[in-house]
Amino acid sequence: MRLLPSGERAVLVELADTDEVLALAEPVRMLAGVEDVVPGEHTLLVTVGAPGDLEAVRRALPGVGSAAASRVSTPRTVDIHVTYDGPDLAAVAAHTGLTVAEVVSAHTATPWRVGFGGFAPGFAYLVGGDPRLEVPRRAEPRPSVPAGAVGLAGRYSGIYPRSSPGGWQLIGHTDAVLFDVDADPPALLQPGMTVRFVS
Amino acid sequence: MAELVVVAPGPLTLVQDAGRPGYAAMGVGRSGAFDTGAYELGRRLVGNAVGAAALEVLLGGLTVRATAATRAVITGGLVQATVDGRPVGYGEPFYLLPGEQLRLGHCTRGIRAYVSVAGGLDVPPVLGSRATDTLSGIGPRPLAAGDVIPLGEAAPPPRADVAPLTPPADGLVTLDALPGPRTDWLVIPNLDGDWTVAPDSNRVGIRLAGHQWSRAKNSEIPSEGVVRGSIQLPPDGRPVIFGPDHPTTGGYPVVGVLTDASCDRLAQLRPGQRLRFRTVTK
Image (cartoon, rainbow over all chains, first blue to last red; front, side, top):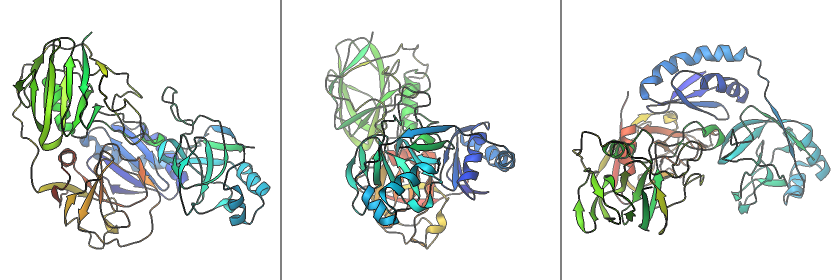
């Protein structure tokens, strides 16, 4: 664990991998003075409500780390039903050397994990999928990707919570509602959850 | 019930408050008033509770009519204002009687004026806040002519009724920045350089024109959480400073982070205004 400065009311905790980030996120959220925690791929941003609380939180972080590592977490699993009809399905098959049917089974057979968010409310970068599905982003991003589009980029998979521009390779679509301000919590996918795609 | 009727919204008038912390992991940023000091002062001058919503008026040009007697105050960007033609002070609470119109001219110093009204703006909160997040689209939409904004119940006026206020600075502004988290991505690891505020700046980010920093590395970093006031270094070397509606994670290195006080100064910088950074250590 390495603590990097991030202004008067935050510290960026650098960790070995996404598993360590996810193990630390919820215990750190419980620390006195912590206002928010933001998982990244290898980091956890910890913000405090008042600058005066930062030093105490910084001092408490290493202890939380060792406690969190020994904890067995049981993340929730969410099934996402997907129709695999995306416009980039053939391109993904060509890039990976798989058939379209093999792309679908690779996407559905290995469960994914919600690593971190960003980009848009409710968007989740899914990690830990079948490594054969690693593909580059599209050379030309689309000006408009419909809500519910299921895509691949790099080693991530993700679902567009709402219509927006986007450069991910689209392999299918889902009717799942990813973000609803009236729901509690508003985002369907929370860091640490397991996601299974179902064809 | 007391209401404000929007007669003319000006270029961009938003409802803002202290923001909606706690949802960044779901991709919802804090948002809230950009110049927090000006917003907080206005809130206190009309006796509003912590977190009460006010209007953030970009560049001026707002005209509103009150439907009942109410107390209000203008802070932040320096702007000439009148109530039915009578001039009202800056940082000095005034009354609007039923039917009277408050009209703001153009900001002559700074660019964001705050209109705080006793009782606060009582639009429906979203995820615990009435702030408009211009990036995610969460919260009320920008004001439009004809909008009717309900006001909350006013508390008794506070004892102080005028604040000695220094308007936002003209000319060269120095912003205090703390190093890190990725200062080591700069070839010369300090924040020296002179810039001007680029015209395509907004609440998401203030873009800088002029000096370009050289990046020590050319790769991207894995996405990581960022805070308001982060000085981000894109591949082209032209820094972007994140405002209150910044994305919650980013893939470009953050080489410094403004102090809270300097974030407030940032909120008031006009396109073309000059700025430089001063590295501070806490």
